[in-house]
Length: 347
Image 1 (cartoon, one colour):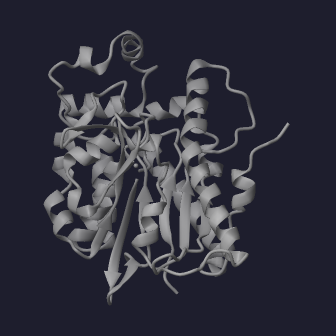
Image 2: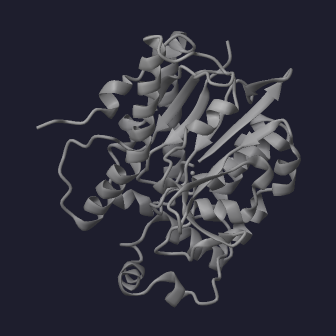
């Protein structure tokens, strides 16, 4: 049974999780997830999640030697960018800004209400590129033909999603996928300006369909779909607006997958991987609610390494809970009720 493709979607209230990328390895001629897994992540317009950076770090580690190398690259990067890490002052400033629009840097929030990055940064200086190049060997990623990596960005002019493949991955692609339009100028690639990929794909699931034989997709839902309380403060309101806005593309993909699944089950669409055939996708989800629902919008400002470790531990516990409850369902059925997830409420 092919292992499921993994995807991280939604927006978090912190900076430890990764933007959209999928990493696969191919074995014996058939697309199979690397080490029994494929990982996907999505860069989002909230300042809290450089997920494309995480995806590139994972790909770099896999290209170097395997899963252990990937884990080490992630650990090294997050240790370096934590508040007690060792980054040059200029890079430290960029990393701190990636965690939030303010309140810690209230002056920055005030400035972005009146001036754009084109006013505040006329020379288009972005130390993030140097930081990415320090930790990721992009040439090694592009050379590794056993690896598939997808990173998405939003075309500013057309509003369409652009999915970059492994052969196209550069520091500029990662920067584009994590480009916060209120903080950074649009990243131009071949003359096309790009913003954060989360506007149009959070995450983009469809690249999996042609890259792996599995019909199972596991979504790591970082950003809560539902909140039990009404936000009152400005940071809480902005955080909830972002959650609703950037969950919308995932819900749209859920609707499409549910629609195709129902047509296949009714015998109205042919199932398969050939021309004119459709995949019957089983969707699974690791929900991080127990860890992330307790976090407030202010947690985006926390760049302490112990906080990162707490988030990592919470993620592992959620993954173990999913495996305990649903491992036998993989390859058999969806464990997410897509119809219920994607339905609209009618008055």
